[in-house]
Image (cartoon, rainbow, N blue to C red; front, side, top):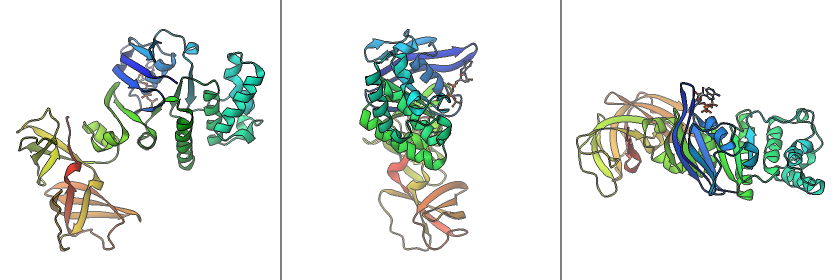
Length: 360
Ligand code: ATP
């Protein structure tokens, strides 16, 4: 177990800038996510941490040790890939023991390490099977056991669940969370799946075009996105543009005039009165009601009137599309009202502290 620090890491491949000036700190024993769409540079960062790719600039520290020039085998990092990468001719035990053979571990110790690792991923009863006699989820468990068998300081996971079906992915998510808690191993996890990141991470770095757009705990990233990219990439949102009307109060809120209403919004400190600003409002931060229903205005909500153009009933929830003064607003309703809103005049209540002004 070790902490990890990247300082001003950059990687170019000929003309392509794959990673541009990335600095991160991962505390010992935590689960850190690199999240972003295809081509944003996350795998390149993981490969630099593993030692397979050399940074063009910047340093990599494992704890206090500068690991930038170390060869991969000296880094003591385990890797789990999307493709499992098990040896097809070796049994489960032999696959898990492979890294221990390379490290010339005495056979009694090796046997007990294999046993412990298989137990941890709940695969002990499959020890003598070949990989092609296992399901995808089971193969990924073996790959995980192989990566932790030599007790790495760092576990690097590259889209480990993307070859699994939805149900197995959920099951493996909780397995990874359990293993992370049991071993307290520092994990760097690469994915483009926001749900994986939100449900597992201690910290998430959201990446775009080789750079970190925002770094924070899952709740911060979701509830306080700083940019349009982050707000849109993680979950659904409504963008409403407006102009700042009043001075920020001590909590960072200010009045913003928009085409749908003048509302209070959390405004970044870089913005001042008169500046244009884009607000991000999550569809679940809005409640919907019939205009004819008795109004019970809440002091913490902004009321907006509109017409519901479309309603989709989904059982536990419903999604609505509302035209409010020409602006289309998405609304998520949990435990939906028994009568449909489609075609009706509606009243929306937007929870004030969930109206987030973006920096850009
Ligand atoms: P994915 O989710 O598709 O794996 P990623 O976010 O992991 O994407 P990277 O694989 O890190 O992205 O690639 C970042 C950029 O660097 C891409 O534009 C890619 O084409 C480029 N790149 C990566 N490896 C190389 C290489 N060996 N040679 C040239 N360009 C590369």
